[in-house]
Image 1 (cartoon, rainbow, N blue to C red):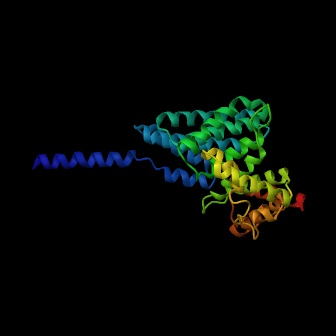
Image 2 (image 1 turned 30 degrees about the vertical axis):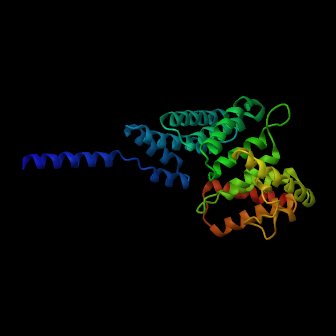
Length: 300
C-alpha cells in the first residue's frame, strides 16, 4: 500500500512539474497581436529561464527575435542607435533559436531583424548582409518548402525592391511585385496587415506599367512560371501565373485589364475600407492607415 501511495505521489509530482514547465506561447502570441510587446517579452524571458529542452527554447527564442523588430520599430526614426540595438539583439535571438532547433520562423525573424537594420543603415551600407538574407529566405521556401508565410514573402519582396540591381546587387523590382502578391495572398484571415497593402501599392505605383504592357508582360511571365525549377524561381513570376487572368480579392476585373497605378489606388482604397469596417485598430495599424490616406490623396 505504501509503495502504491509513493508511486502515485511521484507521478503526481512529475505531471505537476511538466505542467509548470510547459511553454505558454499562446499567451505571448496574443500579447504580440495587440501590440503589447514589452509584456510579451517579459513573459517569454521568464519562460526561457525555466525551460530545459531545445525544442521549447527554439520556440521562445524566435518569438523574442520577432519582438525585437516591433520594439525597434516603435522608436523614433532618428534614434538609430536604439533601433540598431533592438535589431542586433533580435538577430542574436534568432541565431540561438536556429541552433536550438531548426525552424523556418528562426530564419524569418533573423532576416527581418537584419532587414530592418539595413533599412535603418541605408541599402548601400547593408549590401554585405543581403546575400546571407537571401540564403536564409531560400532555405525557407525551397528547402523547408514553406509557402504560406506572408511575412517571408514580404521580406523577400522588400529585399528585391530595395536593393539596387545590375552589377551592384541582385535587386529586381519586377520580382518584388510577384513576391508581394504572394505576401498579400497568404495574409492570415484573422489579421489585417495594412503595411502589406501599402507595400504592394507603392511597388506598383513605382513600376508604372500601362494596361497593355502588363498584359504583354504577364503572358511572358506565364511561360517562366511553368518552366521554373524551384519555389524561389517560380514565385518570381507569380503575378503572371495564368497570363494575367487572376482577379484579385480587392478587384472586380482581372490583372491584365488595369494599369499598375490603377491597381495601386484600388489596393489602398480596399485597405482603407477594410480599416473603417474593422473600427478598432492597433496603434501600429493606425499609423499605417494614416499613411495610406495620404498616399490616396497624392495619387488621385
